[in-house]
Amino acid sequence: MAGSAALDHWRDPHFTEHAEELAAAIHTSLAGVTAALSTGVAEVVGKGAMSGLRFADSTVADGVRQTLFRAGIVAETSGQGHVLKLLPPLTMSLTEWKEVADVLGDAVLRTVPRASLSASQVSAVV
Image 1 (cartoon, rainbow, N blue to C red):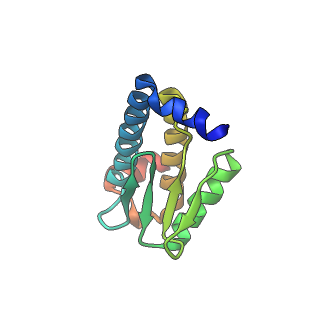
Image 2 (tube, one colour):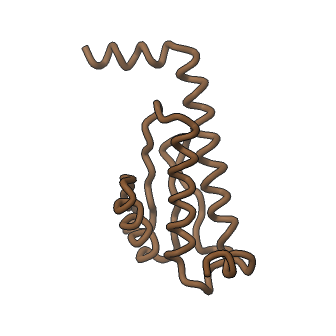
């Protein structure tokens, strides 16, 4: 029963269009987060809405995960703790994703060591 209901979503062209828009918004947001960091601190990984950030330092990934959890956002780590995985529901609105992305960006900027921030972000975090 649940399987056929899920298939109904995938047959709806509006749902698949939304899923593609959401995936693009997620990638853009994550790329924006990494752009605020020094080269090599983090990179965008994954595909579609099943994306995340791979951090060079696993303690940063875990710190961001804990901050997100305290804010009511579920994320997990994998890849020996270096990857922060985000698995937002495909039914999430773009407005809801923007709220999550803002919390994520703030959590990353406050968790990474200052030396890992780009010069323009150091003053923004203070």
